[in-house]
Length: 349
Image 1 (cartoon, rainbow, N blue to C red):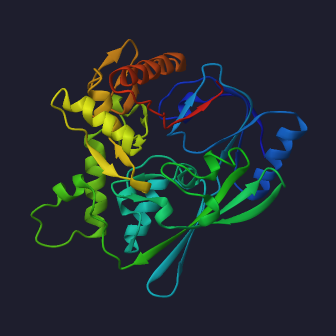
Image 2: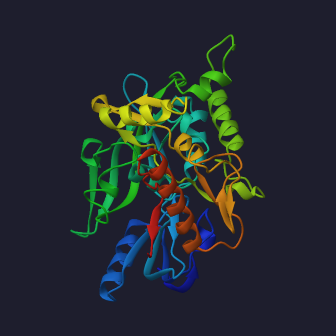
């Protein structure tokens, strides 16, 4: 295990902002993860676990303690009963190549999650989802390092407490576990999941149901059109992805929102959620609060392709990103009475 000092963190994130890590180590095994944790404890250092850096805003001052980057690799593919296929995947594996591997094996379940940046270890934390699928649909278990007991453990899907963009890893047990490996149960020979409006529109008129490979290709093309696919040279990709979660409203909150919109002859895009609630489009709320695609304020702005992506226009600071975030939240609240919740993790603030 090699401990490095004063390592810049901005290049390790897709938003490209933030200061350095006082200490930094990349762990390629469970033993190295344990050694890094013990090093941080022995030296009284705050510990932050870094994955792919795609859903992250690092403070300009950086991180004063130890940043532990998880580099545990490996994909193990097992066949089960009733065409089930289980993939045990190291937390350090890049997510999109793993999705490509499952499609190549003709296994359905995560094909609509193609093109999402980051690593496998981050997917259960946020319960990553897109285009009608989320990882909670397929995760069987998560192997973790417990910072409380300093031992390995395996958590079942139910123990992970998955909800919309949430799990115990970012709520009730935040900061307790380090994800080491994730096991996904997929369906060999299963059909592609075509329920999301963009995908239905893409394949409208197709004589045959799309294959998994065709679905993956479509998702990546759609994501690229919205600057949600990391492409070298595309300035709109210098972001943390969707910056705000789609609000989930109670019946009374949704009714109030509809009344406000009706006064301006507007209709709010919404979708059913649990317990008779409604999920509404954060992008719509942002756009109808005066923040259009391409809107900029100095070195920070909104993607020209996707309203929810806050973009670093070049040499922006984390402080400028947060100020821009605050401006959007205030504008949406003033116009619609709704508080938008950020999706990225904020580090060092």
